[in-house]
Length: 306
Ligand SMILES: C[C@](O)(C(=O)O)[C@H](CC(=O)O)C(=O)O
Ligand SMILES: [Mg+2]
Image 1 (tube, rainbow, N blue to C red):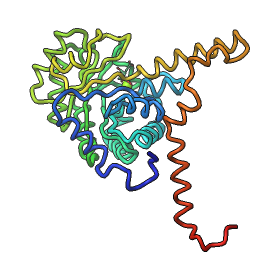
Image 2: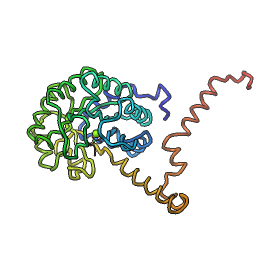
Image 3: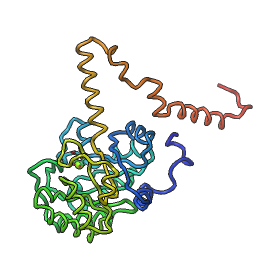
Image 4: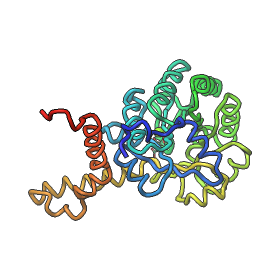
């Protein structure tokens, strides 16, 4: 239904709703939604939480994922997803766009835009995808300061601290960093770039009582596991960050090739979301009905129609 109607808006903040979802039994499944349309599609498929990926956002903008976009550019994506699907959303906050005060500005902006949770990582800029080699990290104390800053700025927003240390300084260093980030106020930990079931299990064993996030990105360092498997390994959240964009991008490329080859889109129609399906997803008719109902309430019968 239209996000325009106050009575239909969620009564609790996205942060509170995200926190409530984390306190339920079972793993919280957060598929990546790279725009408002994909957010509705994910909700229609039955998901009750979403992930906004830096890699997918930047790729959709035709840019590399190096931490070069701005807080307000991300807020544009958060707003469209929060409005269209009204689901708790975990947002990729990269390195926090600077130091303590920048992190605080990011937290306030993301929370005001409708985010339920954010993750912050301990790489230096330019940052990289966590599944690439050649990453460098900030000192633990600097990242702990960012986490503490985020905690101080957050009203209800859930703070997830990500460590990229496994691929840089090894497993034990990653655990040490994660413990320091929890002490600094992180609600949950995202150990990035884990490479085996044994490693996922050992990390969970080293962090008892701390909610952990598993990143099931494709073409990376993590072999395929299902959400049930991550849950059995002790994980509380799982993301499929770039999957929706990877599928959409591939289909899009095939479309352009087809127009070039065939002189039109006629051979692609079978693969298209139809006009009716599109309007159904975005709820066009609900918006029209809302408009008509308002016009009816403010125009008394007696009033001459212009
Ligand atoms: C989770 C991640 O931070 C993202 O931006 O989605 C990326 C995903 C990817 O590049 O595959 C990551 O660094 O893992
Ligand atoms: Mg990212």
